[in-house]
Length: 139
Image 1: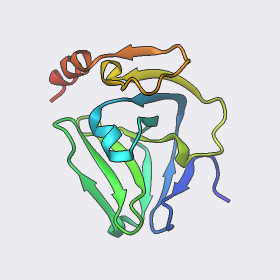
Image 2: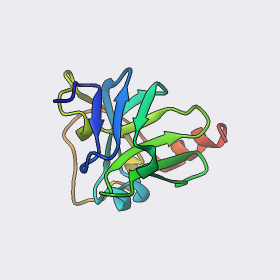
Image 3: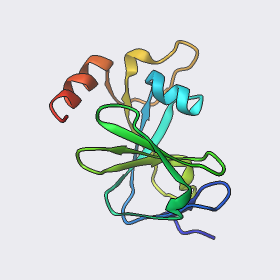
C-alpha cells in the first residue's frame, strides 16, 4: 500500500512520490480542465519536490503559455498540471486517497462553471479575467 504522499497511474507504469502536499485543494472549472478530465479538475498543490519513476511512459502536453499537463502514455491517467515558471506541480486530489484534512479552498475560472453543477463549499474564487491577468505577469 502506498503512503499518503505516494501514488501511481492506473497501470502502475509511473510512480510518484511528493515531499509535501497542501491539503487545501482547488477546483478549476476552465474549459481545458473540463475537456481534459470530463469534469472540473480537483487539484492538490504538491510544490516542486516531486519524484516521478517510469518517465519513459510519461507524456507532457503544453496546454497553455503558463502550464503543461502530464499523463501516462500506457493507461492515460492524468498525473499533473505543472506551472512552467516555478516548476510547481498540481495533482489530482484523487491520486492521494489517504490524505487527511482535505478542504476545498479555491475555485478557478468560476465564471466558466457550467450551470449543471454547483458546490456548496464556500471558497475563494477567481474569474477567467483575474486568472489571465495574474498569469500575464508570469510569462
